[in-house]
Image (cartoon, rainbow, N blue to C red; front, side, top):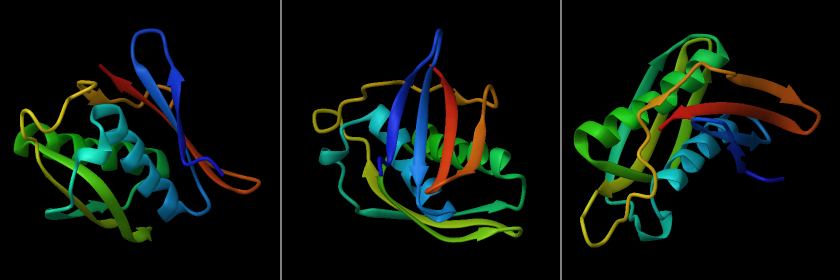
Length: 138
């Protein structure tokens, strides 16, 4: 099963993410998101952050998850490569992400993401797992 793929979109960019369960879906979404931003092979897991998001619909939880990662990238200049969802349910999402500070000359920013949008958001169960579609504002 593919973990994620890039979706062509008129003015923005989208990702389609797959996971055998919901935790894997959200982990793969984090990985796909940072795959768009930088070359993950050059990011090391030196810094760890815990993320807690309150319980909401799966669509909103996905947008809030990626928006929190984008916030940490924009404000703290962090690049993440490892995503471990510890719990996911009615009480929300708890995860540990690992990465490092952006370092000029080591990391290249491939895509500047401005926002994670609700436009055409989908998080749904499929025959062999879960699928999400997310559109990102560039």
